Every structure is written in C-alpha cells, then in structure tokens.
Amino acid sequence: MSSGDTERVDAAFRLRDVALSAYAPSIVSAIGHGAVLPVLALRALDLGADVPTAAFIVALLGVGSLLASLPAGALVARIGERRALTTVGSLDAVAMAFAALTDSVVALGLAVLLSGMTWTVFMMARQGHLIDAVPLAFRARAMAALGGSMRIGVLVGPLLGAGLIHLGGLTWVFWLAAAMSLASALLARSMPDLGSEHRGATPHLSVVSVLMEHRRTLLTIGVAVVIISASRALRIGLLPLWAEHVGLSASTTSLIFGAAAAVDLVCFLPGGWLMDTYGRFVVAVPVVATTALACLLLPLATSAVTVAAVMALMAVGNGLGAGIVMTLGADTAPIEGRAQYLGGWRLCGDIGLSGGALLVSLAAAAAPLAAACLVMGAGAALGTVWVGYFTRRLDLSRR
Image (cartoon, rainbow, N blue to C red; front, side, top):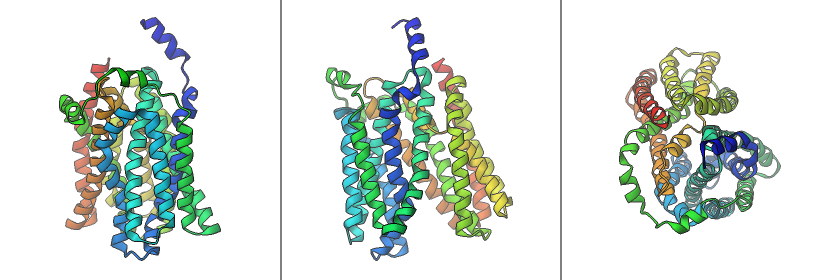
C-alpha cells in the first residue's frame, strides 16, 4: 500500500467502527471483575477463612495472571485472538459460577487462580486484535480507549454488585461475573479473525526463542514497563495505608478513591491523543513522575482534603497513561512471533505490579510509614529517568 493509500485509510478510520468488537467485550468482562474484587475477601471469610487466608485468596488473582503470561502468548499464537477470547470467557464464567456454588476455601482459591489466568489471556488477545484492526496513526488512542473501557467496567461493577448483595446476597455478585464473562465470550464470536491467514502461513515459534531474539528490547523498554506498572501498584498499596495512618475512616478513603477514579477516567482519551500526536514519552514520564511527586508529598498530607489532592495528582498521571503499556508493546512487537512476544511483555507488567506491592509491604515493615513514602518517592524519581530515556529513544526510532 502506498503512503497516499495509507493516509486515506487513516483518514477514513474511526474508533467507533471497531467499538463493538474491540471494546464491548472488555467493558462487559470488566463489569464482572469489578463487581467481584471488593467482595472476594468477604466471600473467603464467609467460607471460614481467617484474614490472612482471605488476603491470600485475593492475591491469587495476581498469581494466576503472572503464571499465565507466557503460556497465554503461546496459546494466542496457536488459536488466534477470537478463539482465545471465546475460550477464556467461557472458562472464567465456569470459574465464577464455581466460586458462587462452592463451600470450600480451597476450591474458591482454585477458582480465583483460574480467573486470574483467563484475565491475562483476555487482555493479551484484545491487544493483539487492536494491533491488526487499527491503523498505526490511531494506535495509542485505541489502546487508551481499551484501558478506559476496563476502567468504566471497574466503576460500574461495584455499583451493580452492591445492589445485588442487597437483593440476594454475596453469591449473586459471582453469578453476575459469570454472566458477564459468558456475554463477553459471545460478543467476541462476532469479531473478525484478522490473523488467521498469517497463522496458517508461518511456522510456530517457541516463546523462549522469540523472547531471546528480542531480549535487548525487553531489557530496556521492558524494564520501563516494569517501572510504570510498579508505580501504579504504589498508588493502590501506599495510599490506603497512609489514609489509615492519618485517621481517615474507611468510608472517607473509599470516597477519595472513587473521586480519583473519576479523574482517572476523564484523562484517558486526552492521553491517547497526546501519545499519537507527540509520542509515547509525553505520557509515559508523567505516569511515574506524578507517583514520585505524590509519594514525596504524602507525608505532608494529614487531612482528607490533602490526601485527596495527592490522590488526584496520581490519578491524573495514571489516567493519561491508560493504555501506555499496551501501546509500547504494540510498538515494539515483531510481526513473526507477536503473540509470544506480547506474553513476555505482559509478564513485565505483572512483575511490576507484584513487585510494587511487595516493595510497599517491605518498606512499611522496615521503616516508619512517612520514611517509606520518601523511599518510594525517591525510587520512582529514579525510575522516571529510565522511563524517559528509553521511551524518548523509541519515539525517535519510530519517526
């Protein structure tokens, strides 16, 4: 295709043209996950788990995601995005139904582990579909909208879940999640299988061989993704601890998080436009830089208003960076072995999320919370330098 043809295709493209196939399954699935997340620990406690065990059950979502990252890449490479989405949507529906029916804490943990594994495959397949379906000039906006669609679901899900708990009890939330996962699988059946011809014409590559071939990228931009993901984990882990430390009630903390989620949601579309217009650097750096600044300011926040202001600062950076990890992965992914590569990319993000949560735990245990905030802020500031340097280099190479 000539450059003139490419420009005409880009000019004719509209994100709403792929809304049903690209975003509807994500919103529907995220509603189910968003409804379950706030009550998962409560379900474990109802089944007789103690508090540490209930916390471990919740953590199994992340463990499942981490374990499935590389196998997910191999699976998507073999069966394609559409079949992967329908398969894991159906499996997640089974897992959530099992979580609603079981009276065993162990069985609940297995269901949660399976759900975490299906979520990784789901996100990777959605990302691969958008790489094929969206012109390069719209890539960041498309990925940001995908990240935004997940945020919409996570906002709506708890509201629906609260109503269902009032009407019928805790297990109804899991039946909602099962229904949403099944609906996402049915919606995915309507999407085109864009990579089918390419899969049949090329030999299957092992995950290890693909990752070794692109190890330099994974050790530079991939490490930047680890840093970005870890900074997001700091927001989730550190701020509730600080809110409790300064005496805010659980309801006040929840309201602050809800307001920050609204700020986050408002920022995702401008973030996608900025990335497509000015490059990935202008969004990747604020994600980590706002976290660094917020951690350094947090010891000064001693009231609900000041804690909310710090949270809003982090939400702006996080919202602008919606889809940044998926965009960077799409920018660096090879044509041959793309799904396997994206599995490794997903692993980088999962390592960052898990590592960030672990850092918060270790820092809070080893030092006073104010000192832990300063240490986390200094680390994020150093991470900002790494992210800025390598995303800037990527922007220059793309041009």
